[in-house]
Length: 138
Image 1 (cartoon, rainbow, N blue to C red):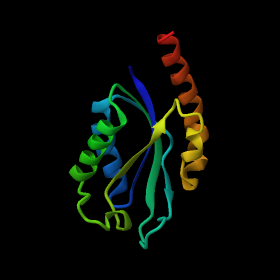
Image 2: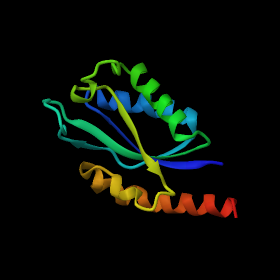
Image 3: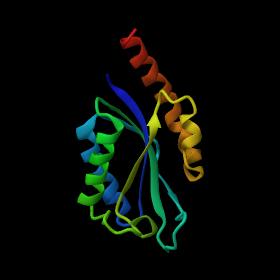
């Protein structure tokens, strides 16, 4: 049964280029719907480079574990060294995370504070998609 996942993506190395490349690759795994992208200061790391960040919804038949493996492969393909134990504290070409399924009632509370301003651009789409999915399975 299809799932709709709420996800984040961010990059501070060649962010516009890497966003475009990541979006092409994400499309292989389902239908994606993106919020507007915004620049934010780095969180929990020291860097002079701002991050380009966005939320997205992904409609897919994949389970979250398999999807995360695909997201990790996209990050590696774009140049992230996931084997480095400090990779989360370094500049990166792409970081893609799954916050959870839209069926989780408190999913929007999991959005990082630096992305709260883009929730209104995506939440109505999320509600509509979830209603369509629920209707298809009733």
